[in-house]
Length: 148
Image (cartoon, rainbow, N blue to C red; front, side, top):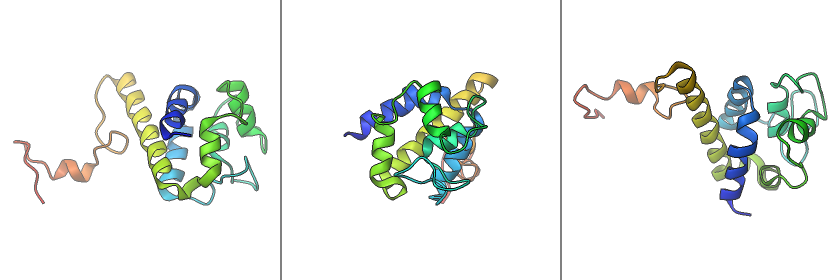
């Protein structure tokens, strides 16, 4: 399965239904390679879950659910079949050890959060979710040249 199919599904079927809090939490877990973000199962223990489960725990329709939160969120909110979801299948193959997939998902989360900020406030955000870090900004002069 191509990573393009996985990312197309993530952007079109997952991100539109994820809350800001869910995206921030997922981005945090992806960035750190957290052991709380598991693969191969929707949930094993309290605070552990797959990508869908962590998004579900931050969604108003599924936040009160436990073990079945991810499955319910995928089917009832995102309208996907967990058994055929490209994102679930790709994540279950390797999870956090697939650096390319993890990086692509993280970038998509950051891009979506930046887009939401831009839509709400009408300005292009600079910082954590814009892809431009404050450190990089502080190294750019007014004339646009960069300092090392």
